[in-house]
Length: 194
Image 1 (cartoon, rainbow, N blue to C red):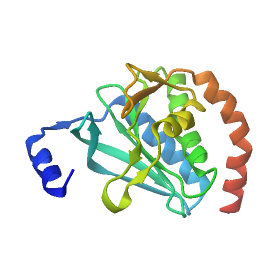
Image 2: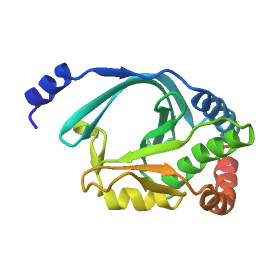
Image 3: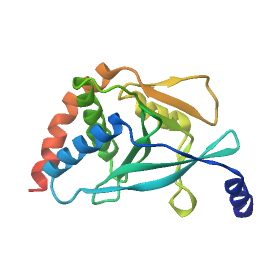
C-alpha cells in the first residue's frame, strides 16, 4: 500500500474511542509500583494514542490511553484498554535477549495480581506479523509471535487467519510456572540498578 493509499484509508476510517477500565487502571498502578522498585533506568510513559492495526487489508484505528515501560536499550512493552473490561498488549519490542520475557513478566504479574482483587477482564493481544509502522516497523512471522506468547499462557481465539490472529491469556497457571523461573532474573536486574 502506498503512502497516499494509507492516508486515504485513514481518512475514510472511523476512530473508535476506548475509555479506561478498572483492569487497565489497576494494572497501570501495579506496574508503576513494580518499576519504582526496579530503579531509575526503567522509564514509564503514559499518554493517549491512536493505534492502527491492519486487519484483512483494512485499517482499524483506536484512540485510548496507554502505559509503556521502556528499558535502557529501547526494549519496551505497551498496554492499553481494549474495551470496557479487557486490556490489550499493543506492542512489545525486545532489543536484548531475555528483555521481552522480563517485560512480559512485569505486565503479567500486574494482571495476575488483579485477579486477587476480583477485577474482571481479560488480557488480549493481536499477532499481525509486524510491530510498528514506517521506519519503526519490525517484521516477524505470526507463528514466531504466537509461539512467544504461548510461553506465557496465551492461546488463539477465533478462527485462524494466516495474516492475523487474536490471542487471549487463558492459562494463567502456565504463566505462574514461568514466573517462578523469572523471579531470580528480576532480582538480578533490580540489584544491578542499585
